[in-house]
Image 1: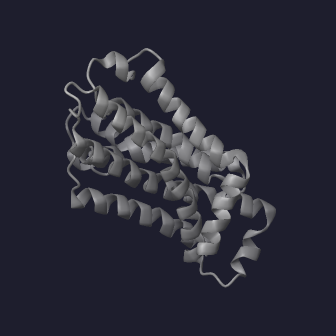
Image 2: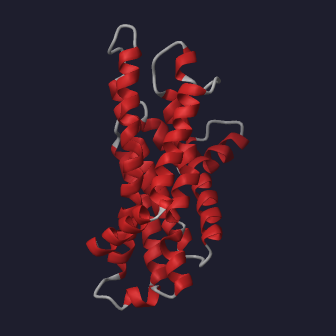
Image 3: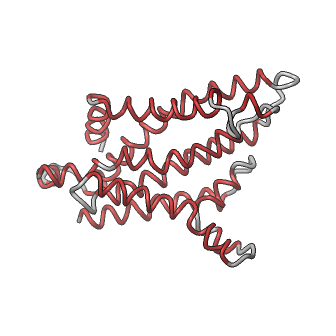
Length: 237
């Protein structure tokens, strides 16, 4: 599994993909949060918090994470190297987990520079330090768990096709549905149908962003991640 992980990271950073994903993520956040005037601009909001960042990042993940994972298996299938990979002394679980961890680590590396936003907001507060650290920490954990779920979804859609574009579109569409689809279905009933909402990722991310790391939310994200990794492994079998 470690060999697959190293191979994936080398592929990401030996080509422009890894750098481009991190750059696009940071550039999009930086422009909307600090430069462009609008509802997301922190400096124009009149109060120092990171709500705009935590609102916008999940929508960026819906497109960026499938862009990272789209080549994971589709390239192997297209180039005919998947059969060679399966002849190595590796189990299918090790192959899947190696590719999953490679993509997930890249997403973590993209999130690390955004910690400077926390320091900046902390300094902008009146008084200095007037920042809800509990909510901020909970939101970051929520982003990591969400990224984990989206990565497993992206891997699954990657193994469904040998075409990267098809894998990307399927990954983005399924990630969007899992994130907001059940919320939209609940809204169609014009009632607060919490049972339907709780099937989707948005409700659990919103719960964690309040600063409370609830066991049910953690188990939900772990279950979603494992479910799509299991589907990927089954398809690989």
